[in-house]
Image 1 (cartoon, rainbow, N blue to C red):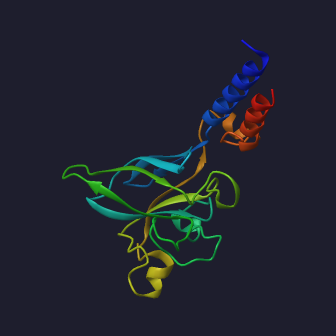
Image 2 (cartoon, rainbow, N blue to C red):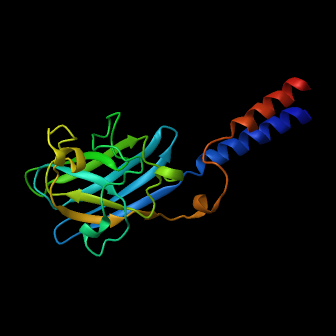
Image 3 (cartoon, rainbow, N blue to C red):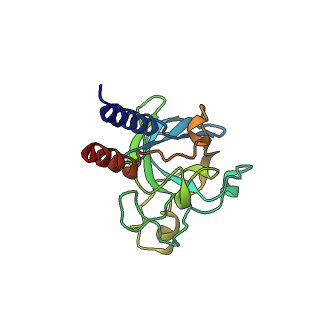
Length: 200
């Protein structure tokens, strides 16, 4: 194996290894009736939000990240996480709070369950839109996604009282969180490797 091929091979392996060090966060929703665990996993397309929740009747319920991590009561979690001072919207809307994650849907006639699995490219586990240390909140009513035509809709989606909440924290293992290396392969590293091969 030539020296330049070996160097290229090592660089690519390092890039792949770095890519695997995705951060994962978790929130445990707990209340008198509701239980559930939701994970937030870094992917190339955004944050994958997944998990299950039980304890509510069949239907849709508002599901948001709130600005504070104080869950002594769910009301203490503050407003929707909104560093850009936007109006409320749906998860796929161009204008929304960072914390606007739409609705979760409970299905089933006996012991309904909400199975959650989607990717959001606005929330983050790093930087300005990081949700770490904030709260995940489940509401009592369906979120109208800012389309209700009134002030409450543009602030909260008229999703009603908060029925369960949990702090979004670091999930084990913590190694990816302790690394200063980017979650994705460095473009400059790959360019350097290609240039090295071509130059030889």
